[in-house]
Structure formats: structure tokens, C-alpha cells
Length: 178
Image (tube, rainbow, N blue to C red; front, side):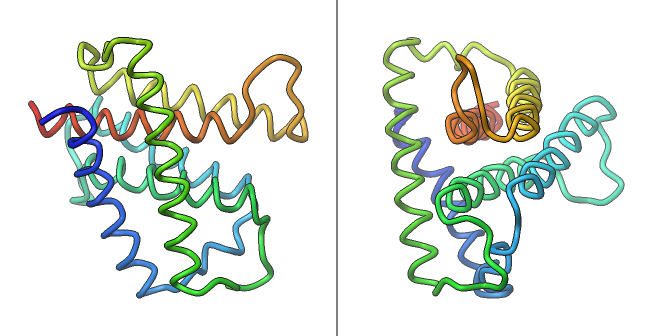
């Protein structure tokens, strides 16, 4: 399989999980403010790092589920950046999935452009490096949030979330290959 096909398989699994949770909970995440989503992703990334270091989970949920959660929460973040936080869930399942699919496609297109320019160097990286890169991106997002969204020269929050999604997808591809 090529990268595009592997990417699609990972995203299909994430989308399936997202749809099931959407059915269970509805779009309750619409009330999240941006900083809350960033912190949710931070918790997941930090847990991955802890599990990588300790190599033991006492809760029983593993790294794969956390990477999927990072992907789905990052897509939620992209939706929230455009729509803003709501006072209560205000989107239908169809609207949510339309936004999810649109943002997923945009992030995949970004991956394909970067993958072309970087020559698939990510295949030579270790999963732990993706975890660290995700944590660095989250620190950058938190700093930009603290700066009221202003940057002098750097990419914005949305670009960082897109990179986080792609790093998590790469990590999941690597884990299935190993």
C-alpha cells in the first residue's frame, strides 16, 4: 500500500470512532472553547509519552486509541476555530460529518504536498518522535492562544493542528507496520 492508501485507512478508523461517539454523545463538544480542546489533546499526547516511557498501562487503554483521539480532537479544533464555541450543541450529525470530512480532506492534501517536498522522510522516524513533535506543536498552540492568536512570523493555530493530525496518522501507520 502507498502512503495515501495507508492514510485513508487510518482516517477511516478515526471517522468510524468519531461517528459512533457522535451518535452516543451528540455534538456536545461544541461548547468547548479553544483552550479546552488544546488541553484535551495535551492530556492525550502526554499520556502517550508516559506510556511510551513506562511501557505499561494500568487503565487498559493503549497508545493507538490516544493517537486516534488526538486526530479526532484536532479535527474538532479546526471546526471550532471556524465556527467558535457554542452555548449548547447546535449542529446536526450531517453538518458535523460534512465539516469533519472537509477538514480531513484539507489536512490530507497538506500531507500530500509536504510528503512530496520532504520525500517521505517520516518513514525513517520513530513513533516517539511523533509524540514529541505533537507535544511541541501543542506548546506552540498554547503560546499563540496566550498571545490572543497573534503571531509575528509563525504559522497560526490551524496549521499546527493540521500538522498534529498528520503526525498522529504517521505514528499510527508506523505502529501498524511494526
